[in-house]
Image 1 (cartoon, rainbow, N blue to C red):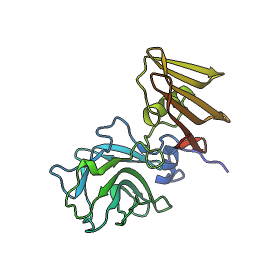
Image 2: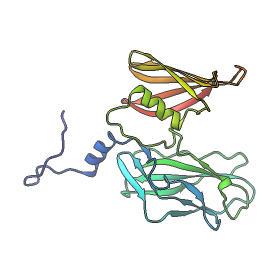
Image 3: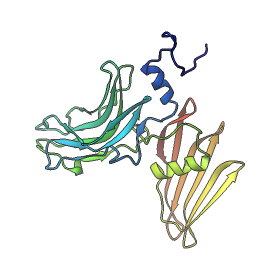
Length: 260
């Protein structure tokens, strides 16, 4: 079968739905918050502090649909704290298909001796992106910034939206990871090594000493693994991580980190 769009309608022969537009936009904009727009949907404590949070101005793409907070921030109220146990809530951008809306909302967890963050709902009815995790101690009546953990950068939970048109060169993809996932280091010289068109090896130096070494691995043209090794001024390795990049239909969907 074939599919195409868009043309002017003549006597109703070219009628397009929201699903048609979402299908197109989902191939243009990756899910996630929009970097650089206003406050980037940052979640913070209210002023004065209450049992609630403030979600700043900004925008996000969700499954080919756009969401925006403009003019004034949104304030979300949290349920009363449990008297005995901690609870963890999430602040999410929630796409609700049946209600035909997108909104910021509270994904409420369950109070427990060892509480867990609530799972994001992602099915044919609801699709959520997490902006932040909120720890709610027993008996509290207000939330400060210290209880809030930003989750926007986590590719599994939200991530930054970027254009999927003209997939970036591997060096651009590495730079995207460096800005959003990989730890940056204080360096004054960076040396890049290529194999064909692929960036395969990055060395960062400070005052002539290697402070970070990055190996990049590819499969079928996709960057699939990034290994980062960090060194102190005496050349001793201090950290060793591997990032695994996961794809779906040619689109980078998540990045997971493991310690070697």
